[in-house]
Amino acid sequence: MNPELEQKLYDDFPLLFANREQKGSCMVYGCEHGDGWHGILLTACKLIAMHAGPHFHFVQIKEKFGTLRLYHDGGDPYCEGVVDMAEAMSAMTCELCGAPGKQNDGGWISTMCERCRN
Image (cartoon, rainbow, N blue to C red):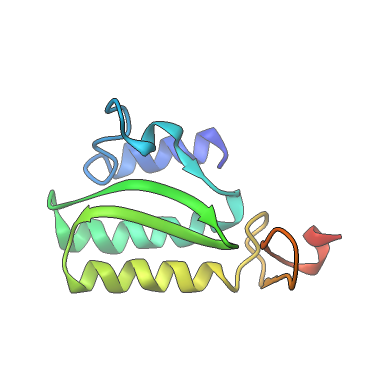
């Protein structure tokens, strides 16, 4: 993700990203996905931060098999629902630009709109 967008998330939600500089944490690699999913991640962060307080933090955020993956420690069923919603939304959203998208049928699985795929 764009470094400026990523830093804004870290600044706005420091508790959710508390371990991002911790040795051995996968968060040291940052958010490993395209800018198109930023809005989905931002919404998830807002919902989780309002609900979970300091009892939740991300362990790794990345693209895998064409969807956003939000690995975390802590939380409750509400947080799990937000994570599930974000991951499901990413399967219908272009990872590059955020427009409606769909997954390809073969090869490296990715979710993109027609414009970005071509």
